[in-house]
Length: 87
Image (cartoon, helix red, strand yellow):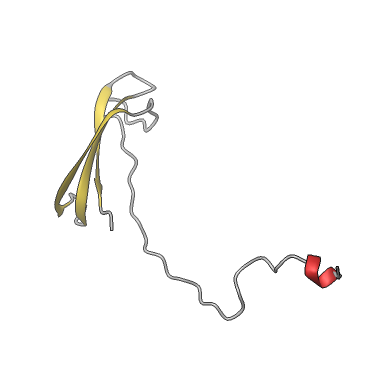
């Protein structure tokens, strides 16, 4: 065998390929209403529902997820609601 047969292909993007423009996503971490901390325990009892409309931030959505959690600082229980647009 020759060394050319054993060589690995070059890593990285091929020459001449364009940089793809990705969409910018705005995301605000949910906070505790009591102490304003964003530290939380793991999510449990997650419920996802197919529903469409316009989210409070003005963007369209087609799924709504409600996730139960509690604050790590003060123990306040809460439900985080996420509006998701899945293609």
